[in-house]
Amino acid sequence: MVRYTFNKQAFKVFEVDGLAERMAALDAHIRPQLRALGTYFADYLETLTGDKFYPHVAKHARRTVNPPKDTWVAIATNARGYKMIPHFQIGLFEDHLFVMYGMMHEDSNKAKDVEVFEKHIDTLMTLPPDFQISLDHTKPDKSKISHLAQEEVEKGIARTKNVKKGEFFVARSLTPDAEVLKDDDAFLAYLEETFDYLLKFYR
Image 1 (cartoon, helix red, strand yellow):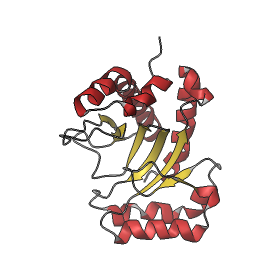
Image 2: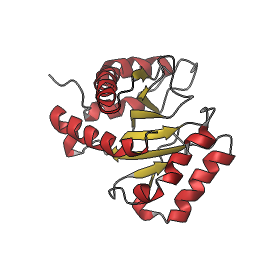
Image 3: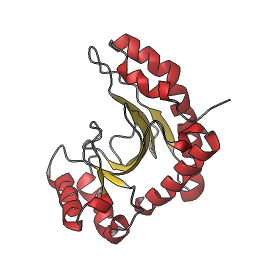
Image 4: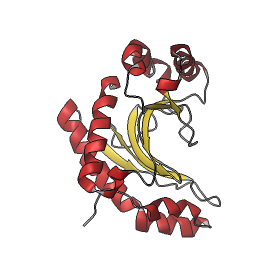
């Protein structure tokens, strides 16, 4: 039985009209896997770091009209929430699955937290060519680091420091037809490899 991966039907959830209808589709086709992935990788990260991690599946509780365009599980070292600290995410938009680490604009210490990417800029710039940067977790747009000059990356870090809504995530993504999404073992291996790279920027 498939426990972790997502089929093409999961990505089509974001085509369902209506808030209640889309939330029901999320419950049926995406959230079970997000819960399983959150538990798996909270344990995985704890084993590698020695820190206690907690999974947080997005609730979209504030929505009253517009259905969500994406969803995720965040994995963080705070049992009560994740938005206020650097954290990991696994999630879906309609056209891709993403895995990422970084900080949202709600991070009360983000000007300091984002400095980890400055300190390890050489590591950041030499990640495998499919790694990306996201400057707004609410939008699907991500830029491949291999296509950016170091000055452009540094500009994104500076924006995170100086702009209230600024965010910075290092990400990796898969299209719905990616081969590794067809098998749980292959998918978990891909995610573990991705987390191992992202951990270079943890603390």
